[in-house]
Length: 121
Image (cartoon, rainbow, N blue to C red; front, side, top):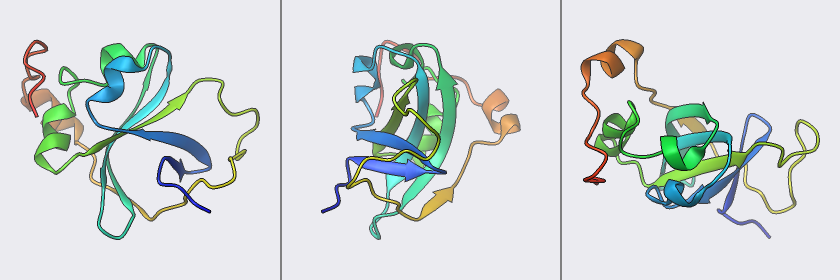
């Protein structure tokens, strides 16, 4: 049995959340702004490391507008310390096709961050 709630990217298992639910993740780790594609694959718009995901994986992030404008519909989260060894993956995790449409650094500098109070999109 497989579930779409756990996604493996490069041997690292991520939990899939609705893209606005990063505010509930109180802890450090990796997060990715992503789109779940019709074929079950994922398109990654941003992959970032945060000391507190709830404070960084939101509309104030430099890549938020880019991700939303390209159809972001999920936030992938890997909490620090949740894997004992590299490549350790729970049974049932999916290994979907992964595509990247990352925000270029020059675009990030040119795009103003969305206002934090509005939580647009």
